[in-house]
Amino acid sequence: MQLRYNYRAYPDATQRRALAQAFGCARVVWNDCLRDRKDAHAAGLPYVKSAVLSRLRITQAKRTVERAWLADVSAVVLQQALRDLDTAYKNFFDSVTGKRQGRRVGPPRYKSKKDTRQSIRLNTNAFCLKDDGTVYVAKVGHLKVTWSRRLPAAPTSVTVTKDSCGRYFLSFVVDTEPDILPDMDHDTGIDLGLSAFAVPSDGMKIHSPRFLRRAEKKLKRLQRELSRKAKGSKNRAKARIKVARQHAKVADRRRDWHHKASTQIIRDNQAVFVEDLAVSGLGRTRLAKSVYDAGWSAFVGMLEYKAALHGRTFAKVDRAFPSSQICSACGLRDGPKPLHVREWTCGECGTVHDRDHNAARNVLYEGRRIVAAGRTETPNACGAPVRRAHVPAQPDEAGSPRKGQPTQAGIPGL
Image 1 (spheres, rainbow, N blue to C red):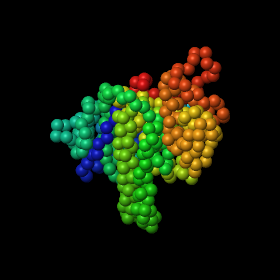
Image 2: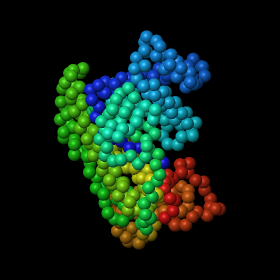
Image 3: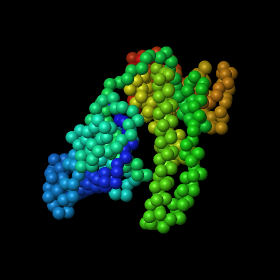
Image 4: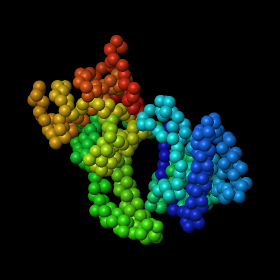
């Protein structure tokens, strides 16, 4: 499987100028090739092939006066920019035709030098790792890198990125074997929320650090200072970098906390089941800031790839599954409840439930059933009966599976 390792790089002034030139050349090639394909589409002509664009916009363009400076950077950077454009078009076509699942992918767009993120991608022909700990990049030089950990294998490609606050990163893609952890006799269902970030089915609660809320006071002051600076001035550029650095600190703290929490959950459980939440929909409500501060999508993505890496079972429960409406003791479904109801008593068996713990237990039962049945058959919100049998579905059972299959990774067995 392929993994990505990120490291902080510290180029000097000369290397920063060389990287800026490489960013600009890759952006120009992207925009020129994208313009040719859009013009051909508008004129009703066939799709322009990559070989034609490579010859026209890279090889021949270097010989012209207007694009002679393309020869000052590595040819690999320009070729990889064209390949990235091909990948963007492929994702767009697969999304339109239905081959790509998930959210719709739009067509490629033009890049701007004012974008907050600039990057180039190189293969093994344009970079190499040195014994002194530096990374040589073609026509840039030896970049000083802070190695937080060793690479498990030789990298196949590297992406050099500059973020909005002026930091440089090297992202290596490595082909490695799964690191299978010892088997555990425990599995868990996780209910994600805002008052408590995550509530596993064993009863404990993982409280949300709320990094953005804690940094709001300083962010407000920095934003106020930015708004008072004249547009186009150097003081405004300095103030913008201060705001970007503060946002980067918040994002780094959240990401670090997500990694630690997800790693602990994967190590302690043989199977992990979570609810598939509609984060984009919740982001349009009055709870948008708290939803994005929690970072549910990033956390669930970490659980998914770490489960595949360490040989664990991972599955998503359909978002329509009424986990908060069902009694985890007897299975009675007594209807929806407003958010301010944090505890409730089952009218059938009299069990007093904590809302989050009860939902986590129901997610666990449904996740076990999905893995045992090997198909998605969670009930929707239209009153379908709730079944929590821990046995595979019968071959002659009526009904059809949903279009979206459950995301399973690792060893599909408990």
